[in-house]
Image 1: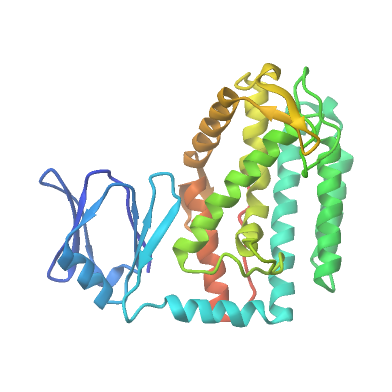
Image 2: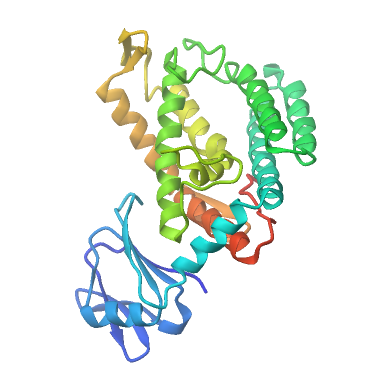
Length: 334
């Protein structure tokens, strides 16, 4: 059963017999049988009557609260909720090294597929970029990732693929900007600053999606548990890095949304480059615009926002945990 998404600000959720109603200013927006709802996701300023909330909880339907930007706030769980059952299934699956490796292979292959598509698109736009060898290299590494015999080997292949991709990423950056390699701690130049900022924003978004579904964001497959690290969120982030963050960075640079003047030397070696508040605002706006952009998702067989696509992937992961079968299908660009 699909979740019920409530996004119309100022609306109210009510119950009438065995149906849920969503109304605003006396107008009926939605009517759906309660039996057809798996969970209710409430974004922003949307009310719910006490009878409606009680009915949902008694029926074992989770009510999840998020901000208008999709940040997870919390949930109400009734006595019949599947929340605990899902977490138990996740703990069993992530503790099974055979399951974890099989699913992790698919995660890495999904990431590499999207890296390849990103470069293929740019190559079609400008053959002079000379990206063909890297595209072929990524295909080879993806095939090897599908046969990796352990997580360490798989992470090594993922690292080699990232190095190959970022080895040519500078060719995609417009004139006036410089990028030679990916540096993270700390980001050593403006392009790396934007990439790091984007990946941080994306991780928070995916972490919210994972929590909204009812999964533990700190227990992953490819990324093993480390104190304070949202490992499962980072697993799902991998397939969205290029489609969302890299695309936003290149758009900001190519369209002049962010200029070299938005960066200044930092105060210390730990922070060598600083992005201005104006530049930060422009980047966040571009990032939010990307999240609401629609893309075809094969799981739903419809066009959904990138924000929704991340949540769909969390649900795909949840389904794998419940079934005990590591047939995770990553999000792939068309």
